[in-house]
Length: 146
Image 1 (cartoon, helix red, strand yellow):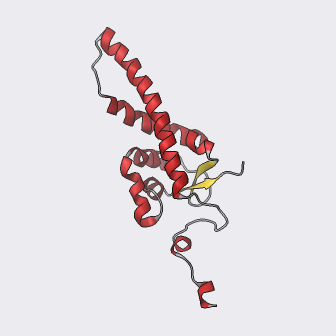
Image 2 (spheres, helix red, strand yellow):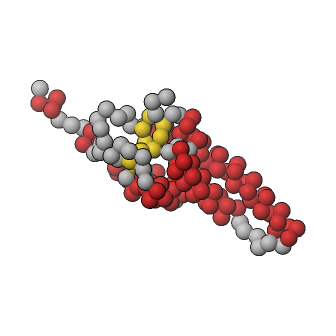
């Protein structure tokens, strides 16, 4: 009888409506891998396009890593700002919302994209069950109705 009134760690740290379904680690890992594949393909084509100008017009060459991280930030920021979803989140029917249940503001998207670009952001899962980009931007990931 007493155990029925106790809350688990996951319930205690949940800052949202109790009826909102949250997203598990497996879905987040799939988002990471799918988005990374899309970003790699996109940044590779941008890199090759820029190298055309390096070769023929003698532009200053840059390493691929600069293109990858810049594409990661722009990809994350624009897709989440416009749609509240990246293509991987569209596939899994999830979206980003603020912890109070509304659409995040521009600053939250900026913080989220910046921390998402830092590849160690998933280590936040180890101690607070949310990645660092969700923690610092005060956003959560939920399933969409569709």
